[in-house]
Image 1 (cartoon, rainbow, N blue to C red):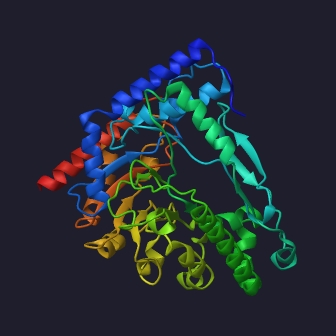
Image 2: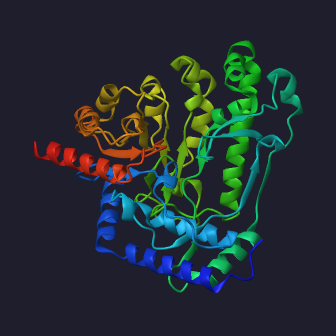
Length: 418
């Protein structure tokens, strides 16, 4: 429900924040960063990009909310997040020149609700959870699965957009936008049936496993195409978020002369963290065909999260012609992937180990620097970006994130000079 009235104090707070975000977005350094991202994502860059994902530790660094109403707090928090990296970290994140709103979407596979039980840490922060599993026996439950529910609340979304525009639109443009559509079929399956049951089903019920993977991929693709046909997608080739901690600036999208935005004009994102325990051959038989049918529809693809991709690179991932970024996680063989990606059209998207940062004390600068140097050695000749994720605490050292970015830049400069 869109509120009808905000207090004068709330309005003033939000307008001040909107003015600040617009001023930051207009800084010369933001134009420089945008140009660097375009060169990087279009495979013409001359140095690695750096970005820190902050939502996991934002409570350590964001100021307290000042607004009183829930609606005003939602707007306030979004603008705080938009300027956080510039004010506190100074990485390559570009402050957005707009207040972005996504369509209010409903997508429930098989009509099932994903029920979760949450747990909090000692500070009350929501940190852990587990899923309840509605599928207990794949062979028995598969025939009874319902239709997937999908829809977009156009009226509610546009009403919210109009409300925000009236409030701050004269200071900060409000736009409908979307990041990269993300699809993780095996994550859906684990949420529905659990990891152990999913892995056993590949061996004990292979036909049923293929059936549900076919159903998952079909329903996801139908949902993506339905949004395309209804005109709900916006090209994500600018200051648009890519799911694994990156930005979408590129001149390779959309297709030249495209009359409407289709999946072929978008960045997409996929991962399969849940299949790290199976062999490459099993991945090729039970998983990859269903991923490929979706992946190949996107204009550009960013793949992977925490899973080590080196085991499935040669026979599977490397065959995707639109793969522009691949995640090199702490569990990945950096040396192997450096050799594989050297001179290629796929970016070495490095996620450094958060364990060098997730400590109660100050940053061990030499240990961290050597961790970065190792990546730069292995990835020599590759297009590289650093995406810092899964940092859950700064351990009371508010400046830790800024300092680690400074060290990465220092090591990059040393590598370039040498």
